[in-house]
Image (cartoon, rainbow, N blue to C red; front, side, top):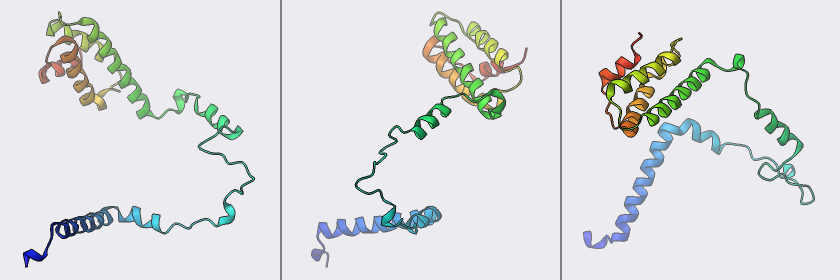
Length: 166
């Protein structure tokens, strides 16, 4: 019986079985998102531009597009910025300061000086506890930057000392 099955038949069966399996899994987990995409109504042919009309391809400049672009270039005033975005901006600013300070210290730094510098940055930036939700990310950043810039491995106790209020 096995002589009648060729390798091409075997691999075809494996491929079809695998495809059916993954399609089934896809419908199981993503069915609610996939099924509506098959039932979309196709717009009638009359909605397509005629061969004589100008076609706006890939966001070509038009008065509407330039106006939208100009509006999107304006910064959102601080009073309209969601609180989380402000906290994230503050966290990014703090991360940049950490990178700047540790890069300037170099490899001739001892761990106490490093922890002191990091602590002063965190204490200045975290007066209103805005950085606390991002503590894990900042700890990772401090550890990696200290290792890369200064060759110093920061332990968990060192990181706790950085965040400790004076």
